[in-house]
Amino acid sequence: MTPPAGTGPLAPGQPVAVDWALSPIAVADWLGAVSLVAGALLSLAAAIGVLRFPDTLSRMHAATKPQVLGVLLLLLGLSLRLRTLSDLGMIALVGIFQLATAPVAAQMVGRAAYRSGRVDRRLLDVDELAEP
Amino acid sequence: MNHLLTVVIAGLLSLTALLALVRLYRGPALVDRVVAADMLLATMIGAVGAEAAINRHATTLPVLVVLALLGFVGAVSLVRFAAPEKR
Image (tube, rainbow over all chains, first blue to last red):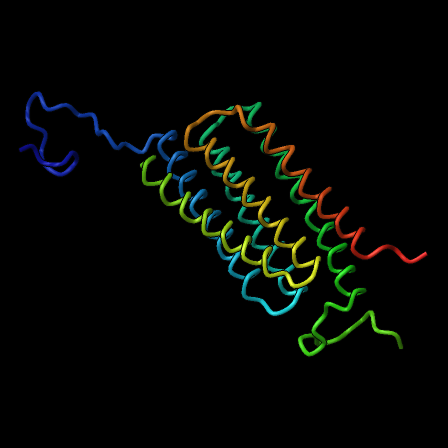
């Protein structure tokens, strides 16, 4: 049995190549895998929030912020594993769409929830839209 | 590594989609269902992207772009239907 690479003195003729060497490609692969798992975990956290939070506005909070960050992390993992310029452009397009459309959709959902009375007033600190 | 990654991400995203479906089913109002459907679509974006990342292909990237726009259009139109603007 040969000792693990890098620990013992090299025997004559022993290959110097270390098979798990930290090449940039391996680092990008591992970072991509970590990003994918982190994004999936954030998506799961957002889903738990959507299921457990008491009213529409707080559910919307869970469905916009952690969800968008989770999708962005998944896209980061995708781009770290694909590593092609044209693919990066299209992935950046998806990310920009997410960042640009999520606030607009959340604002419209929040306004509709407020106007249709789906707001739990006990959970609000201040109601800036209330009639004076 | 790929096999483990597939299992972990498939499990997490399946659980996410299941929880979003439960909220979609329970409601109680249309806006809650819109929020849950938006989340389900974002989970689908994540799942398609993760599949492309694990198998290292770029054939489904246009699908991601379409899904990203579709969620926005769907949410906005449903919400406008639910609470029309005051004139």
